[in-house]
Image (cartoon, rainbow, N blue to C red; front, top):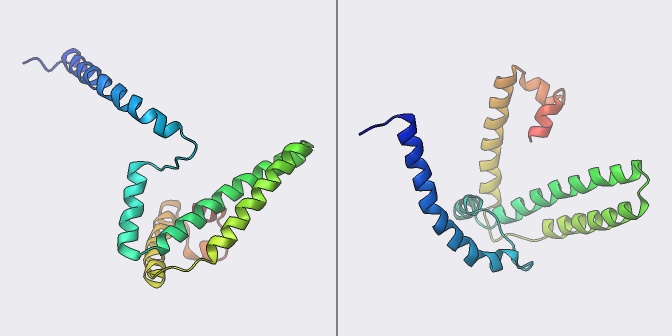
Length: 160
């Protein structure tokens, strides 16, 4: 059997071509579902990760993930709002401010929702994981823990 680059490339193209029909059939079936504005989704791998964390720590995970996601979204809106203000785009700035107020209100409301359990276990697990991640980042950058603790490293703050 010939395993030259040409034969391997040909084989991979044929495999890709064979899967193209299956992908198209799946895509056609999913299209109405995915285009429905009432459908909210995350990737299957992200869903699996979230489910694993919920299995391990309870519904506190959902609250924390929601607040973090909303916080990142609020940050994006704040940055866009600053651009609108700098460019004197008053109407766009007001719409962005309205959305930002809604997002921050959601964060406040979500933070008030209680969990059925797992908060302490989740916080301990996150302490270990974040501690390890910071340690690895410090080692990669050749920084000391004092740089992180004293706020001397803006990149580490972005990392968190």
